[in-house]
Length: 261
Image 1 (tube, rainbow, N blue to C red):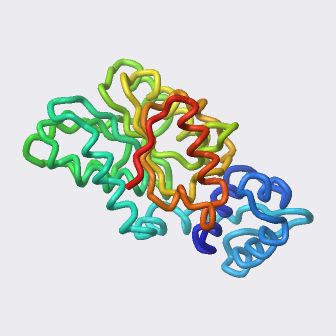
Image 2 (tube, helix red, strand yellow; image 1 turned 135 degrees about the vertical axis):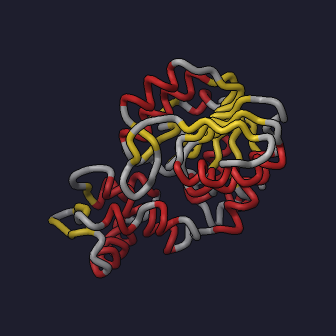
C-alpha cells in the first residue's frame, strides 16, 4: 500500500471513533506499530489528527478535509477502470441502486452507456452525473446529506429503501477483510448498506485494492452477502498489497465472483 493511500485509510479509521490506539490501527491496517506512529505524526503535522498517549483522535476539521472533495481525484485512472468494469455487469433495462463514494461516481458515468436503466442513487454527486441523461430514469433516495461526503443517510433513507426492490445494488466499501467481512468507516453509511443489501437480488461490490485486508469500525456483512467483487489487478500482488491474495482467496471460498480490472 502506498504511503498516501495508507495515510488516507489511517485518517478515516481515526475519524470512525472518538479515539483509537496505535495497536488497533496496526491490527486493522496490517502494518507495524512503528509505521502507524510515523503516519500519525505526519497527519498531526497536517493538523488532521491529535496525538494522544498510545494513539490519536480526530480534530474537528479532519472530516471536512478528508471528505469526498479531497479524495475525488485519488487514483482517478484506477477508479475509471473499475467504473467501466462494474457498468458492464449491469444489464440494460434493469433497476440499479448506486451507492455513494468516489468510485461509484465513475460507475454512474459509465452506466449512461447501458441505458435504458432505472437508477436510484445514494449520492448527490452521482445524481448530478446522471440527471437529464437519455434513457436514464433517475431516482434520488431521500435522506440526510452527510457533511463532507454528500452520501444520503439516516432514518428517511432507510425507510425509503425498505419500500423498494432492485435488480442490482452497486456497493462501495471502506474495507474488506478475510474474517471480518465487509466494513465501513461511518455508522450511518454502514446502516444504509445493510438495508440496501436486503433489497437487492444481486450485489456487486467495488473497491480499489487498498481496501483489501482493512477492517473499518462498522461491520456491514459477511463476505458471502455479495455476489461479485470488482477491484484492480494490484489486489493480486502480494508485494504491494500483502493481504490482497489472502482476501481474494477468502472471497472465492465464500462464493463471491472476482473481477480484476
